[in-house]
Amino acid sequence: MTLQRDIFINEVYEALKVNKKIYFLSADFGAEALDRLRKNFPKNFIHCGISEQAMFDVATGLALEKKKVFVYAMAPFISLRAIEQIKCGPSMMDLPMTILSVGIGLGYADAGPTHYATEDFACLRSIIGTKIFTPSDNLTVKFLAKDIIKNNKDLNYIRLDRHPVQDNISNLSNGGFQEGFRIIGNFDENKVVIISHGRILNQCLEVLKNNNNKCFVVDLFRSKPISKKLITTLKNNKKIIIVDEQCLAGNLSSSVFEAFSNLKIFPKIKSLYLPEEHVFENGGRDYLLKKYKLDSHNIELGLSSNF
Amino acid sequence: MPTIKKLVEISKQYRQELFEKFLQVGQGHPGSVFSITEILVCLFYEKFIRFDKKKLKFHDKIIISKGHATVALYPILKNFGVLSIKEWDNWGKKGLKSQLRVFGNTSIPGIDATTGSLGHGLGVGCGLALSYKKDKIDKNVYVIISEGELYEGSTWEALLFAKHYNLDNLKIIVDQNLLIILGKTDECLKLSPIKNKFKGFGFDVIECDGHNIQHLKKAFSKKTKNLKIILANTIKGKGFSIMENIPKWHYWNPLNNQEIEKCRAEIK
Image 1 (cartoon, one colour):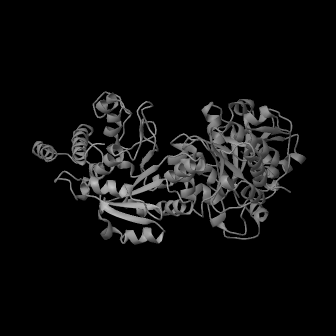
Image 2 (tube, each protein chain N blue to C red):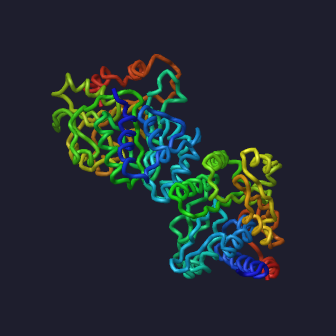
Image 3 (spheres, rainbow over the protein chains, first blue to last red):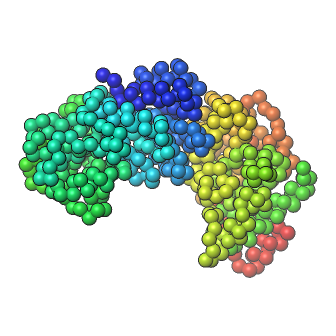
């Protein structure tokens, strides 16, 4: 299966055939598709060394000269190591730039907590002007890459999974893409809403299979800014479960709660998230998700539990 | 070209203007601003930074990576007509609006990069220089960094980058006044031998008197085999005996009338 990163990079590759103002910067992080890009567009690939901070400063300089810049590295490092460079560079100077962050959540299970990105969402969400995307399938990545390459006016933080995800979990129109979410299952004001994003959304889809009459799922692939349309659509739903492969502080449930409360709507929200601890235990990603009750079984239990 | 004598006069004039502005604003970083006055006068008036009179724009770029000293640019930008006199005059006057700030940012005409947090400017300069090289555009990027920025790892990351990509249109000037906020650099956390460190990174280093315009001009003009770093020896707070080499004058301090008159007399 093709990885999300390869799908995105392949779109950049295609765009490079006609647009030489595109620059792809990497802090020594690779991909199969990147090998081809490096080989065929060596002038547009900039290896920055294992120097995330300088990479963002260099990217800022390029963006000041109206280059389309993609900055690429492993999620834990690209998000936290250089967050001040992101703030003082593209954010403060209002420059378009796309940050490709690979291996969100416990994606690097077996590597250990230095390689987990379980707070990157909260960190980048706090940076002024960021748009945040966490695609759950390959189709969304494709839409996203095409849109960014064409429009390129924002500071985008793209959270990609390290592992393969489904090609297409549900239909996605251009209009739906622009709204930043899609509803999977049958919408009903009396049902429980399960909101998630990224690979972990698949756990929610498993729940949906056996509980179509009790719930539906929202794939919130753009979590900043959250579409007002989503909030008004869900305004009468009383119970919401939010599932995020992040620690609690500032995670997806914070974003969703803020979006509702801004419109003075206060549904009951149950948040499922990773614990406030560094995870040294091994066993693989799915084992850890199960341990921390982020698997389909525990999400399903949430449907009938007290809110 | 103006004579060296004239440039010395211009430097003095800028010190006067900036001193009066510090009095008005009541804050800022005079020590760092006055240590780069001659460096800037030489760059702008000796046309190392080229000016397009018709467009009222500078052809080359300058980044004051030590963002707390960006104020030193404002009177120059004003005198070239890039920044309006009104912006300059209003700054520090109660109730009047001005775009100017203690730290420069890109909303101010003539400021090429927002700086203030140390250690960013050189990397941004690398990005600009790389862009011009890729596009085969004849533009130089001057970056003034403080010696204190050598404590930031990102500065060294950027130096590696500049060397690897042979950014010979990137002109690095280190304002070496030997002081940081809490005292002498080598007493706080030893930086020396700086020259050897730059050489170890593959740069040619030209050391010069950062207040001697003739020396600066020679240093800026000198062709070198490798990429060049100019190590400009300066005095923090240069021109004012009350401030020179006194760490606390990193920041502006209140002055009594007698001290104000003394300062004014010293830069007449």
